[in-house]
Amino acid sequence: MQKGILLFFSVLQVCLFSELVIAQDFLEDVNGDGIVSHVAIGDSLTYGVGDGTSIGDFVEEVPLTDGRSGYTSRVESLTGIDIQNRGIPGERLITEGVYSAPGLINSSSVDGVFIMYGTNDAIFQEDRSDYRRSLQRVINVAKANGKRILLITLPPPCCNHEGVDLFTNSYNSAIQTLSSANEVPIADVAGAWATTCNNRGECELYNLPEGLHPNESGYDVLSQMVVGAMYGVNLLAEGGAAELEAMLELPEGTIIVKAAG
Image (cartoon, rainbow, N blue to C red; front, side, top):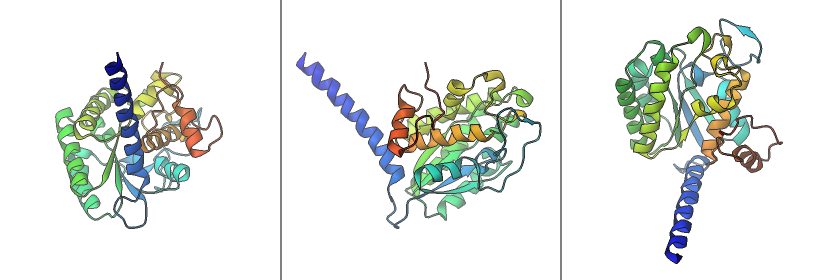
């Protein structure tokens, strides 16, 4: 009985320590240059295309943005940490990102890399195995450069882009696998879409009926999941939103991600 109690507390300590390490990785100056900063790489969802529209707006063609909006600017506002937005609209991981990302990472002095690729790969129905291999190559480069890594899952497209979700779902499975295999944290945006959308078939977090790029509220959810991962807080768990609000001294209700269950 006593051994069982000791084992329970040992496991609990390991879990708490793991969450703390994740938070420290993204909140501390890892490379010692006196600045905490990260770079976000990916496609138009990283760049912020579609931001600025509201729930209920009719949007068939999303508005272009200047790269100063989207989830990265929100993460900066919430944390005070510099996030460089290097998203490239239209870029596919398999055909372009796997080649452009290493050069960007090699030349950057940031502490960490946020990786969110796959929406355009899904549109072109790229193979899951090719996607997984390409993502692993980018992870390898980031690791070799001593960067902290955060993987971000893809929200499932809908409406005018119905069917693309079959591929984003398969990529998300690969992202989950690589997160575990490489022991790097993950911001489960796909999970947040599942818990937070009122209508998963026509999720109000998207520009509708376009159904591929998030609107203002969608980018809020995306950024909150990233910040939760940075601080080691699971927003999909009961009480996660309140915990993050307390950490960041935010008013109650600021975090709009809903817990599972």
